[in-house]
Image 1: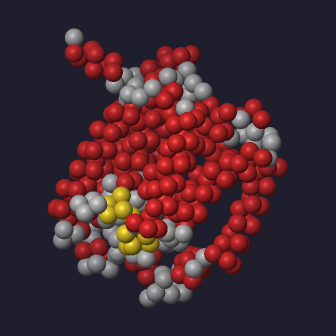
Image 2: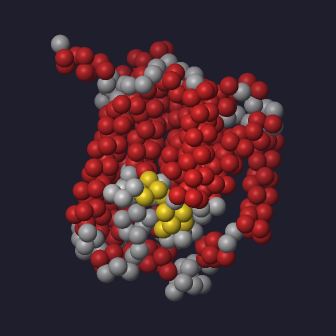
Image 3: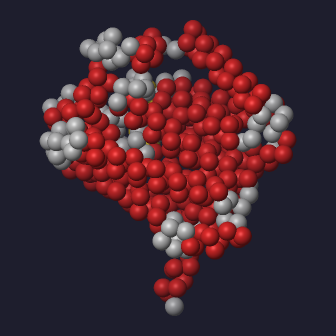
Length: 378
């Protein structure tokens, strides 16, 4: 009697999605273990974070999706997250020039990671309730306000990378919400004005240097361009099949900084080469496909918009992290989903996946038979 009960309880879990994520997690563990003198310690801590995240994922997946649609809950979580971000300026730990972490001794917590998911939830709720009147431009400005407050707080830490992710999430969800072409052009205009304002009045000199270095990556390889330069060397040196696990010289000889977090893709590509990178891209493609599949069969606009927003969140991380690893994007300190070391972003990702599984349980009944017959009967 127990087995059918458990099977029914977790029937909403997308095992294809988890099967695609599992190798990515393993790639991250193997890479950070092979390149660090403290690799065993990193491996142990990351395994603990993965275990905790998976338990959280299973718990969240069993919560009715209607729970996440409650306006009072979402507003309360949003305001609490804003309060936590504000508290960083007083209680946060300074690391690499940014006051982005709470230090609890044995572990640290980065609130901006959770804030990204909260922004996705808030925008999904806002646009889902106003979908029929999305043609009104005021909804663009109101939604922008929801995103701008956390964007500003994260930017002032300063955590330029996470702030850009929040901006990408807002912009992407505006585009998929069904606004007119005229309003899309208006959004582009707002973005251009915002960038010019940031450039002339807000950006610090080192942030301007990173953007300039993006345009001219070889202009200062001993200074602002050093990380990107060493990263591109690591990726290129992997060639077709890589140097082999534990034989990446750029990381082992410590030419490549932050190889367990920001530049883990470069460390991985040096070991596994072009073949390994293609396998990794395929796995991420499957992950995004399964997330977008939830959007396709979403029972309401909220589920559709949340799944789309979560896909945009992951895709933004992929685009920026891999882009900066191969010298196509400025270095901003963005993690690679499911692969980089750290607990904050791992838990955030699995909470998002748990909400998706809850939405999957309530997928449109008209498509239930199609879903069961699609891809290995799942």
